[in-house]
Image (tube, rainbow, N blue to C red; front, side, top):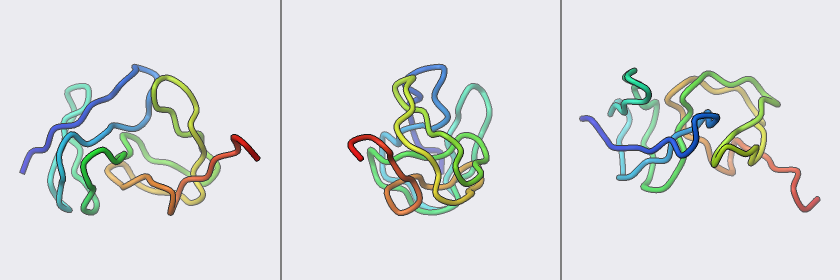
Length: 88
């Protein structure tokens, strides 16, 4: 099933889900369809590119953290696989 998401800034490499999505649902980003790798809750981030460990994560056009592990496009990005150096 197609789900809605929002890329906030052109520099972003994640999209924010505007509704709860199940694994294998799809989103459209910049004219390309991306299949989600797992269920992602409303308001959570999905990767719109492949990531390696230590790659920066951009949301709002700003770096909000870095990947702790590599994930594929369509993967869920949250505090279980993303770190942040702010405030440390």
